[in-house]
Length: 163
Picture 1 (cartoon, rainbow, N blue to C red):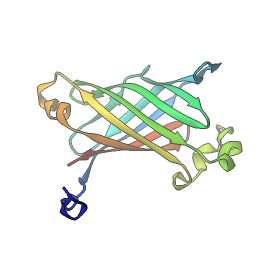
Picture 2: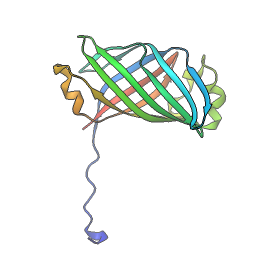
Picture 3: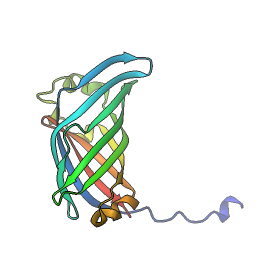
């Protein structure tokens, strides 16, 4: 096939809001610099998620086993969502959070870092879901993306289903 015969790119997938998740974090457990970088466990103290098709609470103890190396925070999260009707949905996601060097002093102050404009940093995830609850079985087969931001006392994510 010659370059002029390449097909026209397909229309990119659309995004539909699935839910917004807000989590208050417990005290981080910083393992220090290891051979692969700095490992920090950030666990959820409390949280909730709200969307048109599902809503509920985040199970405390859910968390992110974050690895930081070369100023890139690699997200490795496992979260248990409990819907308002009692179903459990396991959500796992990887992703990246990158904050410019100029923001590092502001990032160190937990009392004000939520005031940093999210447009100044990159915080993206790719969640996947697993549940045995029949009413939410549709979530097992979707592809999703998330956009994170710092909030007072924790983090928030807007999660979108790709269509």
